[in-house]
Image (cartoon, rainbow, N blue to C red; front, side):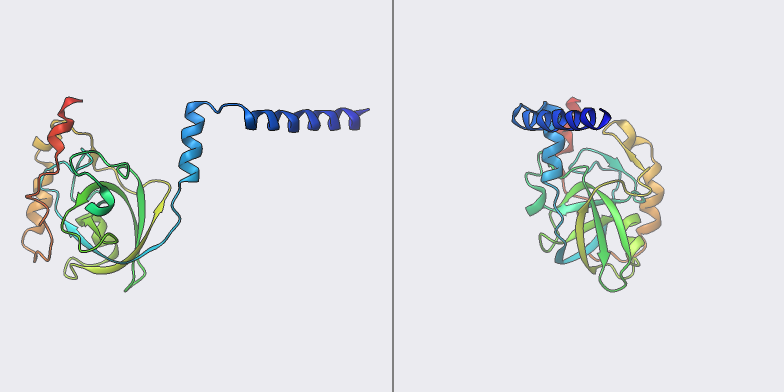
Length: 199
């Protein structure tokens, strides 16, 4: 008797699955499914990592970050319209320094108009020093999109009045005495963050 009940329950479940497959999927589940299907598992090569200073400015994604935050600026060819928040904002990438195999996982928070190829990434100083020295300035990398979180991405704040706190000034002052190989070249670039003041 139990075997018959188990078999009929299993058959009912399978039939329900077939009907669910043809039924409309609720919006929140549809979005999650699209996200899983669209996950990019490709490893990108041929790029370089450089670093830049935040200088108290919000990135193109609209967040203020300190120089120690584990964040990245993507080449504008990948980022898209720098006057808008990109679909890449908030995604994570794992970057590997080809020279020493050190890795860092970073959150995409900005666009890089000075990157030399669409596979190059500009890193915050904190992220760059996880895989290379400041003196190196630029290193060859591979990278891939990953799920999850940057391990110590606690230096992020939303687009509010945080830029006037002065906390980032010590980060900027400490690093300004080093050489600036493409570093900080984005600091004068307007990321279009004033559009997000409407929030």
